[in-house]
Each structure stands twice: as structure tokens, then as C-alpha cells.
Amino acid sequence: MANNVKIKLNRAGVKALLRSEEMRTTCEKHASEIARRCGEGYETNTFVGRNRVNAQVMASTYEAKRDNAENNTILKAVRK
Image 1 (cartoon, one colour):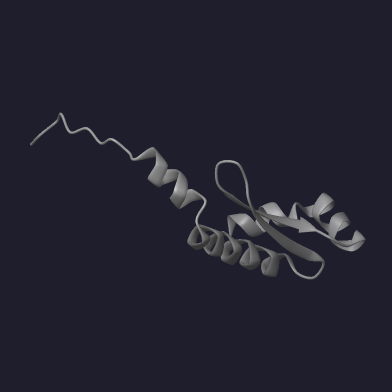
Image 2: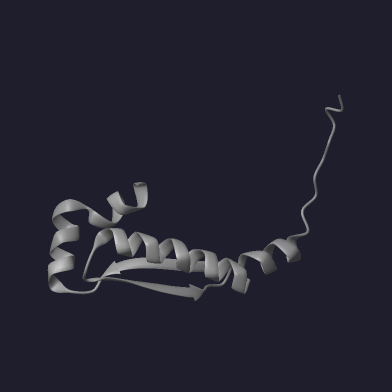
């Protein structure tokens, strides 16, 4: 067995992958599923940042904000 295996990443390729439309679609899918588990009053946002695609789930109504503050609803939905 070879123990001296070295892998050199193509940094430009990794950056392109992390910022790609396919990655955005994947992040949107996961964020939407989490928002669905949270219930009404939660929404998602996906955007391309400096280094990668970002997705967020946020409470958008007063009731959802209160629910999330009291029960950590978003965190619990991520863990499922």
C-alpha cells in the first residue's frame, strides 16, 4: 500500500464548484426542506457570497420569530 499519496486540489475548480448553479440548487432544496419542517412563517434566502453559495432559513412573521426564540425551531429542524 502506498502511504505517500498526495492530493492536490485545483483551487479554481473547487471555487467554481462552490459557487455553481448546481450547488445553489442543492442549498435551496435543503433550506426549503428545513423551512417546511419549521412550519408557517419561515422563509428561505439563497445567495452567492464571496467564496460560496449560502442559504438561510429565517422566521419572517412575529409568531414565527417568537416560536423560534422560545423553541429553537430552526435549529431543531436542521438536526432532523
